[in-house]
Structures are given as structure tokens and as C-alpha cells.
Image 1 (cartoon, rainbow, N blue to C red):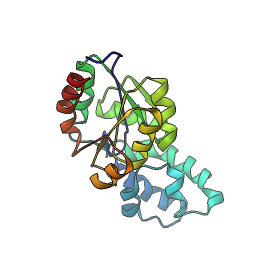
Image 2 (cartoon, rainbow, N blue to C red; image 1 turned 135 degrees about the vertical axis):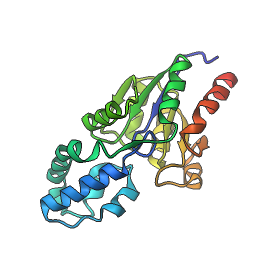
Image 3 (spheres, rainbow, N blue to C red; image 1 turned 180 degrees about the horizontal axis):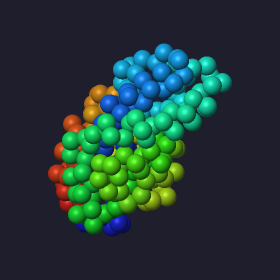
Image 4 (cartoon, rainbow, N blue to C red; image 1 turned 120 degrees about the horizontal axis):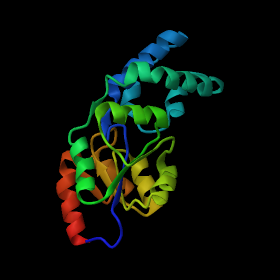
Length: 206
């Protein structure tokens, strides 16, 4: 058994949830609202980094903050109901709970919208922290004492390593298994359906 309480952090987009349909719809609505062309199909292949890093491809830099605020305000009406849970997401969180641990979500997404997704999909997290990307995710991981962080992006690997947490990567997002390993992931799983068995082995070995 581990010598300290188990806390596992999870990324949100393309780790716990497939938000591509909802985000695509929101970008399409934003394009119509602003009269600015956005390739929504392309944008949803690049999920992970903060919203502003995507918007700068479509809007002048001096407009991205205002457009990001508009997007986040439009998001609940366009993106929540179209978003699905990733395969094994609920079971992965439940496995952490069944092991006596805490499951937290640490994401770059605007925190109120992240909470709406989890509530809609009935994925229960013990804490949700938004607006953190890559190395800055370490702030929340350290605060909550997370020893494992599960994500789909090389930025998630960097955040886990900065926090001194084990980096468990799932190859369900924009980064391939090879890219995740190269970035320094300690473990690479095909998807979250493999996490409960991995967690049992991890705890037995600890």
C-alpha cells in the first residue's frame, strides 16, 4: 500500500471528455457571431493549450482577450450537451475512489465550463481546478497532493513532471503515444479503460 493518501489528477478535454463536437459547434457559432472565418474542424484537432492560443490563429492579437470572453460566455449554450464522456472515464474515476483515493480535475479550460461538463456527464470529481496549462498545472497538483496525473497532451506530461507526480498519458488526444513517451510520460495507456487495472498494479507495487 502507498504511504500517503492516493490523489489522482485528471486532465479534462480528450482525457475524461470528448469535447470536440461541442467545441466545434461553439466555434461555428462564434464565427457566425463575429463574422470571422474559423476552421472549426482544424481547431478541434489542437485541443489542450489555452483558448487564446487557438484564437490568435483567427483574430488579431489585440482582440483575442475580448473574443475569448465572448466564446466562454457562449460555451454553455453550444458545447455542453454535444460533449461525450471518453471510454472508461467514469470507471477510471470510480477506480480511484474505490481505492480510497481522491480524483481531481486540473484543466486549462475555464473552470465554470469544466464543472458544467462534469455535472452534465455525471463524472464526480473531488475538486476541479481550471485555467491552468502545462507546467502551471503543477500548482494545483501540488496543492492537492496528487501523486499521479493523467492526461493526453505533452503539456500534461510537463505539468506532472513539474509537480513531481507520476505522468500517466492516454493516447486519446492530439499527441501520439510516441510523442507522449518522448515528452517523458512514465506510463502510456491506449485509453482510460486500461487505467483501473494499471492502478491496481501501481498500488500493489508501491
